[in-house]
Amino acid sequence: MLGFVDVPEPRPQLLTTMRSAEPNLPPRIRSIPPGPRSLALARRLRAVESRNVTFLSDEFPIFWRKARGSNVWDVDGNRFVDLSAGFAVAGAGHRNPRVVTALRHQIAQLLHGMGDVHPPEIKVRLLERLAAISPFADTRVILANTGAEAIEAALKTARLHTGKPGVITFTGAYHGLTYGALAATDRELFRVPFEDQLNPHVVRAPYPDRFRPPPGIAGSDDICAASLAAVRDLLDGPDGDSLGCVIIEPVQGRGGDVVPPDGFLTGLAELCRARGVVLVFDEIYSGLGRTGRMFACQHEGVLPDLICIGKALSGALPIAACLGSADVMESWPESAGEAKHTSTFLGNPLACAAAIASLDEIERYALPERASQEGMRFLERLQTLADRYPCIGDIRGRGLMIGLDLVRNPGTREPDPELAGRLVTGALRRGWLLLAGGPDGNVISLSPPLTISRALLDSSVRMLDDLLLEATAGPSAVAD
Ligand SMILES: Cc1ncc(COP(=O)(O)O)c(C=O)c1O
Image (cartoon, rainbow, N blue to C red; front, side, top):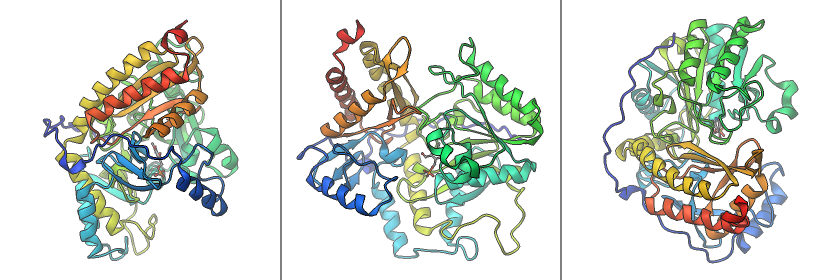
């Protein structure tokens, strides 16, 4: 059931200038962030939003007013460079002009359609577009409004296809926070308060994380083989008959930008195929060019049964999708009037228009290839920092999805979330938007727009150098 097809080679580099993705302006700070307007908005927000949602402190956050390309402006008139692409959403740049034009055109036509009754015409165009970029030979798609919803669709599809309730997920995994997705998400902070309402048939296997191998494979000489053996043991163990789905991020995003060893995904696909288990790749973060290929799984030429995408799909409006091979997706019965899985805003015309325009931009500017080239160069430059600052325990990534794993002690690799926090707030004050990720919050996660200029990537390395110098006792002192 895993249909392996030839994965196309990357197309030649199209061009290096991206008029459409301008501007790529340097930071400009007028009022030390967060400025007075941001602070005032934080007070108003605190009075009306559930206190769980937005982290508020004297140093955080800024409130965005506008954005374009790699830049974000806040309400105090400061201009930032967004090294997070707004959670890896603005792959083709913030407020990409062609996306804006497509939205203007769509606004003039239709704002809402009946996703599963009288669908908007543009939904068909998006589905055809997704089928065209999909690595499956014969693709079927379920649209969703968020990444987590796309994961729900994938989990339900696997359940229908195999008739089995059990799911194997991985340590460090993040699949979203709705209940199906949450059960597969690893971090206890998110999961534990709701554990008694989650799918009890979920089991966890160790993700082959070279720098922080999880229990079960720590100490092994070959973490790839050890992790595959752990999955095999689960599939062939006493509960194996109830396991119908394996879900994995081909590169972990919120888990700390963790890249599995070569061969791991291929081995995983073989294990699943041999047992009729549905393999889901969650490419909500890694997909659509971020890692240097349209889909991260194409680095190994491995094909799962289902692929979830979101975030950069529209680069702006909430839309995500579960793509699948026809044989697995057609486990869903034909609708006889009531869709078993749908939602009011499924295939929203505006979101579809933004997605088509965004996919056009990703292809027009060969953004996967650009992510690959610029990512390699960026990683090399960041490596020079890692060579000088022992507090950078590890630097890893693929394309423009890069993590700096900060440690208190290079010997013990003890995570240093405080240092990560200082870098994030220090960068903010200088006009750079950074995110700290990983299970311990100690990984500086770099996922800029794929359209970011080389000059800005180079200055971000200088900015990190300055911050590290300031935040630590300096390269030589730290090395002592
Ligand atoms: C890999 C992955 N899967 C799923 C999700 C959930 O997506 P959403 O926040 O749109 O529900 C995320 C969000 O960060 C993600 O990184």
